[in-house]
Image (cartoon, rainbow, N blue to C red; front, side):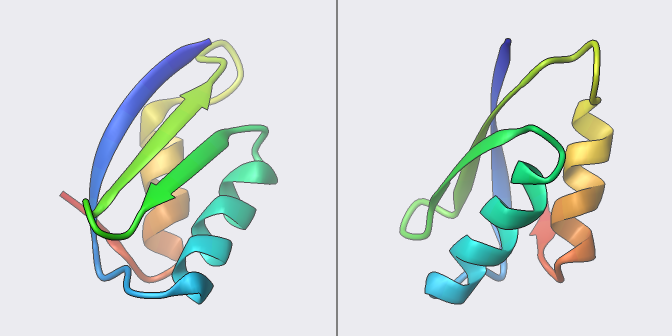
Length: 66
């Protein structure tokens, strides 16, 4: 399992947390959202999903990965 911390802008509430964590859970990615720190910590199997796919999934929910 690989672990990375992504900076994500546009998150502000519980709905944001649920949207991001839910989208990534569907990809078998464990995500922990930190609203105050504007980060998403992801743990994933790089043999099954790439960091680019994870970033795209977050952006598809309407947030900006920086």
